[in-house]
Length: 261
Image (tube, helix red, strand yellow):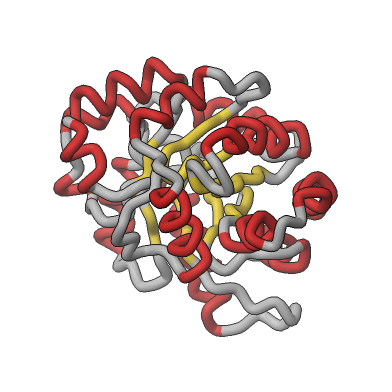
């Protein structure tokens, strides 16, 4: 079943323009305040200059249930650095080379900030989407819907729920996966391919990005081979920051972008 009346999304429109040019979409996750508050804005600029199409700004939370050890480490360090939610807005407003920025955090953050205040400040700062992995579509706060929520889909998502989640997602469909990097398609890859195939029939104009487990050019190529329109990288990029390999960032990002375009 095709969904004729999709929610309007400026982010989706811009991502489709990238697709129309024959390019894969590259999204990079960056923890707000890591390595430092001052460096966050500079890193956003660098990521966009190097080829990222989206930067996901991770607002640190003390109990990040959907994140692995690397993101948990950077979140804890950011909190120790004194980063606060309100810092998100000033950093985004002062970013010079910003293209598409999406917020990613957990439900407690906007709840304690105040849903309406959070939405207003986020929109005013230029955010174009939000991912709250611990809040299902049925419970997503109405006050935050102006932020164009993006929801996660997995190979275990049933067909009925797949329709419901895709129907409520805005800028892109976030496909959760662990990909085989040997070039041989694993059973997990086949399940992810099946999810993408189903979602494309439901929301043919919404890009599908694979995340969780994508770290290098081969992963990126494998993702595109099974039908993704782009990829999301988090931990692999953050490890460069943890290891202070700042000089490698530009080549790493541009290499991934080239691999999917």
